[in-house]
Length: 166
Image 1 (cartoon, rainbow, N blue to C red):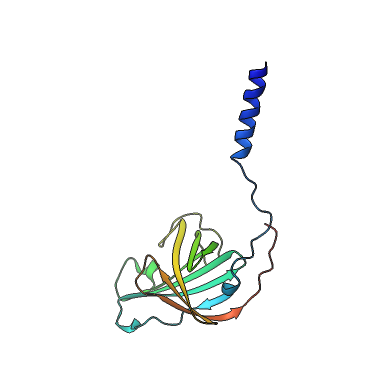
Image 2: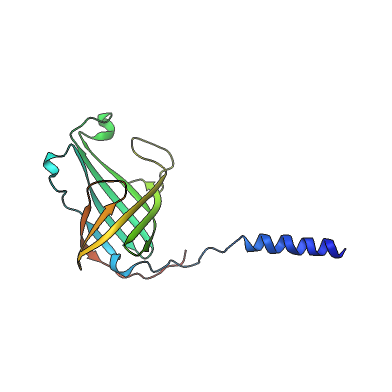
């Protein structure tokens, strides 16, 4: 009987030790990123075959990214690529460690609702890592680990995080 009680105690302890509660409030996120950031151009964009312009919105520990892509190359059907111009949307949570920004989320519809099925564009998980360097108080450079062209974005709207219940 004593061995059975000990075994049940160990099972419960190990099971509860492997679980954790999700937070009931948003985390505050990084103060310096709170707001909306816009990339207006890319160096030598008229000479590039394909380039993208980014719009970031950071609110507490959440992000919303709009990526407008322009191309001179025909990648697919015109109903998707709209004569060389299309837009993709993502949302999720971010974290920062030193000069590195980690974005992890999902590809979304234009209203930032979750995409439930694939269409012309990317679908599912969105993960991006940026090395961030501050140029001025209102200009940051985001250098992606998966792209060559850095994103120079300026602050267009500053906000303050007010954590909300989840």
